[in-house]
Image (cartoon, rainbow, N blue to C red):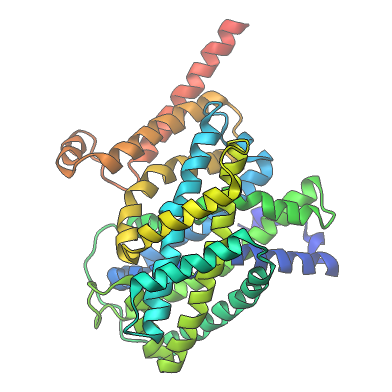
Length: 436
């Protein structure tokens, strides 16, 4: 670690102006990644991990905090999303980008913000409120700001994110000083892999490769170019990732302390409410509910806007921004009625299908792999594997698992990636030798 850190020009920390820029961009990057949805997963993971929370935390932090930062670095090194993914095949950036945009847009992430707003925010403040009416109002407001200037909501988000962060720090400190109990030995297996896969649910690795250009553009506009641009990006990524990791670990630990007294049947939203009530009382629960509600709203507006712009761009204007925004809100509202837990359960196989390939692309771009045959050999089998593990019935999956014992394992794709990458490299050697 020391050698890696020494490679970063320590001189950048000697300049007051650069330190200020790093602080501002680090906070902005943290804010982009950390939404209200990220609050619900660590406590519940801690609850179901018990005394094995350290292993779960390690797995969760790798995918929930580490991968998003590597995603930013990967795009910074490759330059564009097309360069990031086109070595698999020419249309792959379009296919992967569209799948990711649908996932972090109307199918999963946006509906989750509305469901969270109702379950943690509105229902906490108004227990007898109607979920259908609440969700309709949520998306009416989302659509209004998405179709009009969102400067007000952007400024509101800049205020709400620090408030959310401060509330969470107070909650975590109270939870550590006055723990809800002692982590219980639940005798679970695969705590690390459970945490690793749960980290998919943050969807921040997807967000990082879609939003990276915003951060890179922001840094370049401050006058940084070439190698210094990449270094500043890496440093801000490190600090943003460190902030995410600390928050995740704290929430996960608090959840593990409740493993001896709270049933794992509790919903993820109710778990957060329970912790807020136990650590800060009703007043704290009220404040957290308000902040999470507004944070979800700003996130939904940002994602709806991004989805509208993305689909208008890739269709060369055939899908108009306003039409896409309206459809996104209507479809997201229908999905939001499922509730947080059902959305999470629905999203799990989709994320499991897409995440391994995304991980490979991120790693390859970070370590500057250029050989397109290695990309093809590693990514295509893993993508097929991810789809199969997601759609096959359990009985068939178990039969395949008897032949390939890692098929139902969280890391079953890794041997395929390694073998496929090696085969791709060998194919490239033959191709080059024939060409010569």
